[in-house]
Length: 233
Image (cartoon, rainbow, N blue to C red; front, side, top):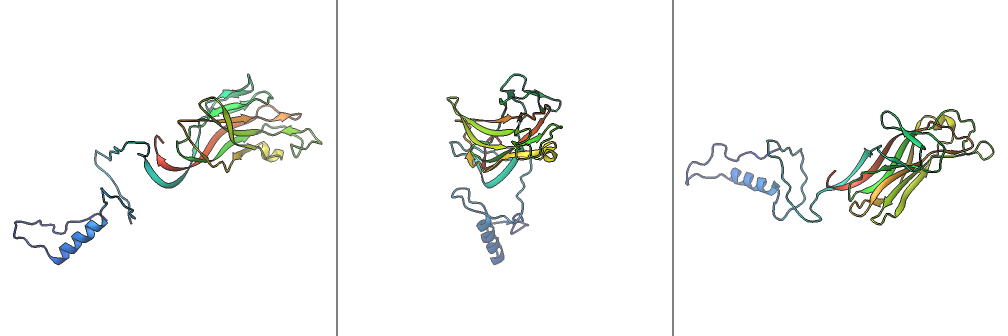
């Protein structure tokens, strides 16, 4: 709870006295107050609510002048605005989902807008394979073998050199699982995001092979990251 006045009626003159109870309450209150000079560690037992019209102004400067978090895991959808690596391989549908139009080993590039300084844990693509596949499993070399979709996470440095941070092939090799919405996740990435040095992309390559079927959908891309500070996010 917030501090209350130790003497609600106020002190009227220089001869006003302070009781032992009031002095003890002042001592307790100041011991619970935030030290604005030396800092410290505090464990509130209730919410701290700032109201009014002014808010809080954060005026620190320098490389480390960020609002720090102990640790917070966030999951966010990334933009679906992207560019195709090969002409005609992917087409954008209503709702900014991507439809696989032709068979190709070239991919679709989607930017990842990651928070600087965060640790990227995983990236997930939500995908719906087109209907009409026969072989089960789809990767059976004795049948109409299919190269499964591939999700890659790329870091591109200032020299334009792309590094694969992580990747994952689609493991939904049963057509019943493949032809409905399912997730393809590149996990255990443990990559520290450095936005001043790198930019980040998803490269997604659709299915290929003898049993290729047109019309698969890439509907969403998500990332999970551990953040320990706030910058622009």
